[in-house]
Length: 294
Image (cartoon, rainbow, N blue to C red; front, side, top):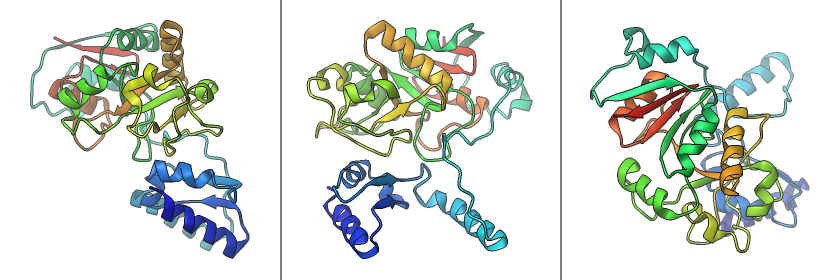
């Protein structure tokens, strides 16, 4: 896998004399191939935008229009992928209280209880290390197709117990399909053969020697993992959660998948609550609020 992409990259570099690659389109979402391409000797830099599939066309069109109208090409480093709207505590409480203003359309009345937590990251970490599978809803949603700790389902990565339960109870998909690790960026090189940031989950490097058995729930059959590196600057709440997990288990990562049963990924607090009621999650953290079934 990736041999054709590698050949095309090398041909492009030879033809242009440029060794910094920017890759877009659905091919950029092939994280195994992307990791092989960025390791080529001829490649000095590699970048793929988080919205690399067809959904990113609107961004390209907007950039082109801006350039045509102004002659300028705005150049700003991409610091994160959380460009969705944020929701206030009032809006979250309206959803939890089944206020019609929240937009919640109830199809199932699965009982639940909720309360506000003083440290939602610590609470979430405690539940994950206890084997619970939780929804994680914080801040603005991700622009690209990957859940990156704003609209995620999180679980313990240390064994396949959680990943098997996720496929069986919640995702209803084939058991061979892997889940991804989200890891504190400062510790990523200790767990993966990764010497560059991977904030948008677009690279699948090999797991470091001797580490695969310790994170069996997120390792592919070929010994790689689709890694997301997390920093406090980009996502302070998610980084705090990972820090608590690291302190409790010695493992600075969690299993991370999208907050949904089937498409689409949840967007609003009301949608998150409806998903909790409709699927077999143990709990969800919506802002500072803990929602538990039963």
